[in-house]
Image 1 (cartoon, rainbow, N blue to C red):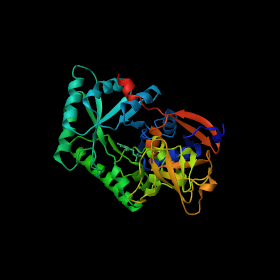
Image 2: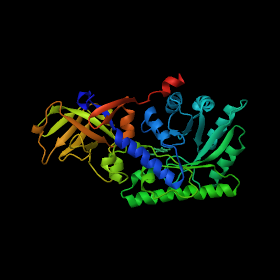
Image 3: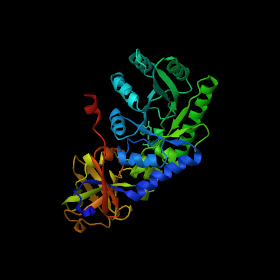
Image 4: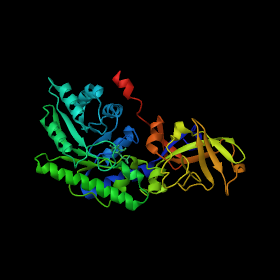
Length: 380
Ligand SMILES: Cc1ncc(COP(=O)(O)O)c(C=O)c1O
């Protein structure tokens, strides 16, 4: 099928770029002798997960129980759920632990007690990682505080829990403005974890897993320090306009674009059929590129070069409003005219769609499903 035959809006994935990105990160992990456990929340796609395993990933990272269940059904057997559990999810987690190799994360004593209580009377042993805050200040324990050590001790003491290691996510890399700043966050991420792992080792609690990873830090670090065992980048499979603004990739590396059609031509603007339900309302790296709109509009079908004079100014549910200025004129557009857009945040755009069109140049060579909306169904 030719891409012109697709009904818009449609998510296109450039097969060559996708393969390049998957191989590039796998190679980076190999060079430092660390394992790679990609976060599949970016793509939620069995075919892409399989490509990552074929290129050497040891397993996958997920954020939701729905993702875990969908990927287990798809044949995946080694899963880290890198999202803090809540008490009502524990029974499902125990069920998953019987069907796959599962690691979960914790960062507070109450959930450790709840997990242990729920397992009492069963033979289940849950593999647990301690979530560490390496500077992002979202979730995780402060490794410099005594509570971090005592939490590890309480996991170790729990009959049905097995302490397997430590995990962090350097999400503050997204607040940086230069690649030098990303490099500093990457150093902080790795040093915090290696130092804490050494402390645990001295206390007789050596972590088997020392897991780090965000796309910007994994991209910008020269190599991973001795003591890091695993990386968990996710976004790198597609990249996006935010990663390019940060300097973590080039626009030409972006594998996912949104194909959209012009639905209305006005004097100084056009309207396309990619609104917030396609692109999300993520405003991107506004601290670097203020008012850059909701994605990068590309100049033609074959290149990832930004179009001059075209900029998203507003998104409503299904409408995307694009201002035309400078060299461009609305006269060059007609209803049905097609544009491609690199979203600011591909993880969110992917989550809004139910399928990807895999393209080789202008041919659609496959259609792959996005596994989402499973959580509620599976808990019923
Ligand atoms: C816990 C955790 N690990 C890994 C990742 C992957 O990071 P990125 O999206 O930068 O590739 C994320 C992303 O939010 C995360 O929350």
